[in-house]
Length: 346
Image (cartoon, rainbow, N blue to C red; front, side):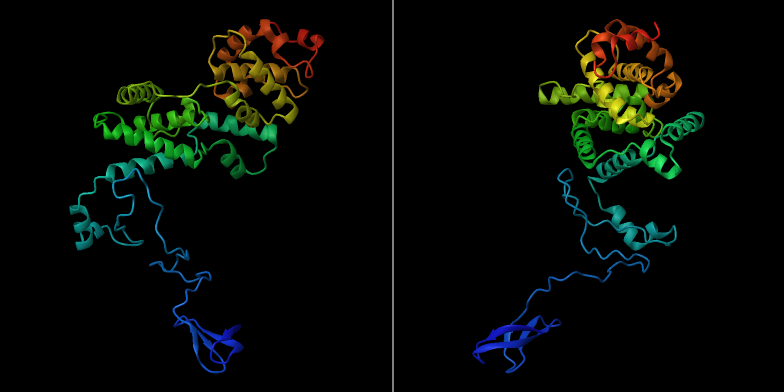
């Protein structure tokens, strides 16, 4: 029931809404004031084939400009609980006969999405040590929280979309045949992370790359950069990796306080002013080691190695290169000269 002006009654009267016909009717004279109105209320019914699926969504997925048909084609999926002979049925045979030029792209995009959300594939000894490290420094009571926070690559949608775009450009050149497909997809993900200023280490990408090795991913990355550069007539912008890009993530893995994280972030930024010929990841690990040694909550070198993925020997060598500049790198508000003298000599 509602209130509206009736042209026949010449006054405001109560009206009745006929939802089945979409009509608005005057309750006094029966005049149809509005017809075929659209019901804008929420839809609570489910239109799924399976009774167990209570999702009321009636629309398909978003369009994908990287696909020929925009991702709007119909794919006949195998029903839940159906026998293995479904694809040999009439519907399955007709679908297999139809040529879908985007079938390979769709499978590749699904693989990239799976890699982006997959848990990091730690080997059992390292998994146990890192789990013990996480619980030691963060007092994590739930293994589930630990797995979600520490052992998942967790890339955002923009990185996945960028990786899809890179792979589409490579696929359009028709020059990737015979190459390791998993390594190519992992390399696209690695390049996308760098271009979106959210870099991940090759070791992290390798752990979700379906068995592709670091060397294979490295070769695939060089291949993609070379061929895309030749197509565009200029070098592919990869984005510069800085040690600070990894700092907050590494500090979080170690459960460091906000005070020490701030000091480590400032220190690693200052270290870029010096000619230290080490990888950004190694510099980040060495700075964390220095900062933690100057704090009350000291971290073991082994723990830092596990949290950053950098070998202990590499951290020592990077520390040796940073030690002559430590008085200029460490913020004055965090440690004074007397504290710096207490650092062990490399």
